Image (tube, rainbow, N blue to C red; front, side, top):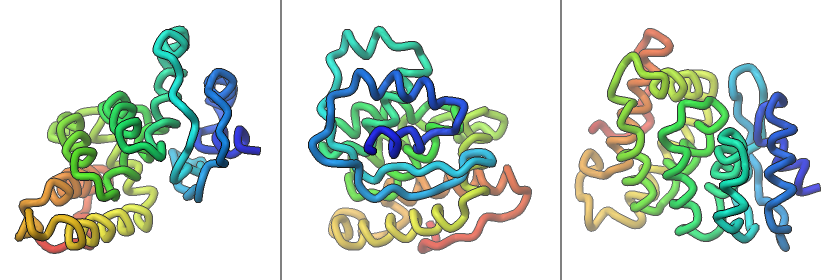
Length: 201
C-alpha cells in the first residue's frame, strides 16, 4: 500500500504522526516511485524518489502539530512538481531533525539549480562547527557514505550536462559549495577527512 511505503520513510517512533499526516493528504493517482534506503540513526528508512499527491489546503496543514507539519513538508519535498518541491524543501532544510536530513540531501543531488541555491542558503548553520544542524548532517553522511558518494557524482554529472556553459569551473557551481559544507560536517563527525568524489573546489 502507498501509505505503508510512506510510513517507512520515517523512524518507527514517528509512525503514528505519519499516519495522521497521510490521512489528510489527498489520495495519489500514482504510487510513490523508487524509494531508496538509508540509515537515520540506527534505523533503515525508505525515502520516496517521487510522490504525486496534490498539496493540502494551508488551513489543513496549519491544524497539524509542529512535528506533523515537518513530516508533511518532508513528504512533499520529492514531489513531481519542482515548485512544490522547493516550497516544502525550504520548510525543512533548516531543521536539525535527523529524519528530515535525507529528504534534503536527496535534493542536493538533483539538477534544479534554484533548489541547490535554496538548500545552500537555508543550511547556514552548517558553517558553525557546534550547531545541531551540522551534527545532524554530519551524522547522516557518516552513516550513509555510499549514498552520499552517489549524490556527489550526480552533482558532477548534472552540472556537466545542464550548467557547464554557466559554471565553466566546477568550483563555482552552487552544488560544489554545498558538497564542501556537507563533507566538512561529516569530517567533524568522524574526526577524519571525508573522501571526495568530485573535482576539487
